[in-house]
Image (cartoon, rainbow, N blue to C red; front, side, top):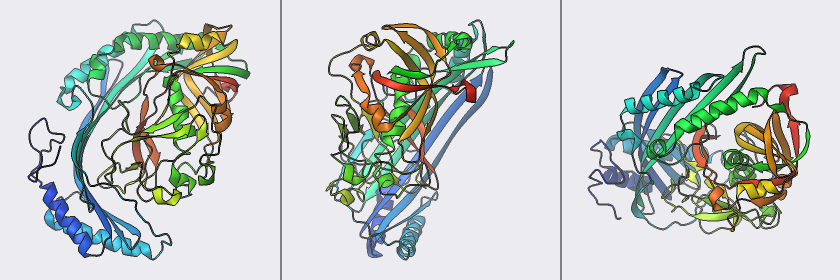
Length: 509
């Protein structure tokens, strides 16, 4: 839908700002000034961010908070060098001043920057976009949220042996306006939610304690996630499993076949697939925060990353995905593309200035900033493992395992600076013997190398086993920024993986 010059109006518009700021007029002035001062490209983001969070413990309210911030940032490309400046004072005079400051920063950067950036083209876009949700959580009374969490706590505490329970929910609303010197003018309205809980059981005679976290992860979703799911039943089940972990048998180290549930596997995907395929890491532009990558551009289309059934799709359009948008922060339309196809590593995450470095003529739209005051830079899209074309069930995957372990939930993890050698724990571990789940284990962590691990994948669940878990907090950059991202996946089976017993060095669960 084209933008009108007098800005959006009406409750059903993609962006509902409680301000009289004329964003289009401010953007036109900033971009004209940047061009007059010699910028070959410029963009301005005028954004409002809202946050609401509630947390409880047992029968007490721990915290209720809400807040918002509003401001703008101007980015310029001057003589092949980037400059950026921002301000919370959204006025005409301040926009002009900040634009001049961005130019001056670019000039200062040019003295030390040997690299000259070139951008691929992007189509001119005039559009509004709204993320998919049924009920806006910012229209839900806070007391309704509090009462729901306290009721959930009671469900967990009703389980004999449960001693503690924490629960919370956090909601984020991004209202984003972008204008570029290419002529794009884009409004976006995004909602993300992260309800969660943790249940703990204690054996007071031994001092042992075990926890089970909630079964769901953050998603791009509205308050319907609360109203349409049986959270009370899940809290009760989590309490029962926390108690079971106290008496579970400690695992014998060795080689096992693993059947990994999406609530666990998404984190392994994030660390071993998502981060190493960030092109800026492979080019050594990003190193201090979480390292570089074992992948390099010369391996594109050549490296056998996994078995032939392994296909990873980078997707900024995936329903429920936390990194799903209409357009990225330089106006590139959201899209999907293969990162790994039939087991072969085939492509990267790119932006408009990264794409030319690997011979691409278009960007995949991976530029993002976590605030109007943050420098936009390459961030991870949703990266998801395709399910089997046949609707294979979890039971079918388990049935072909003689000696294995099924793992649910995210736990401890460790991965090296090139995203190659890793170790992952989980929430619950279930022994598989001769095709049947026979009971719970504990003290489990598995260890592998990225290509060995994905090469050992020989079974994928079908669409009915597919889920889209994600994380609100993917850190990167200096100063650090946080990105929200999801990794859809089915249940998956991996053969002959090294399993450790973590009890000697402390419980990793």
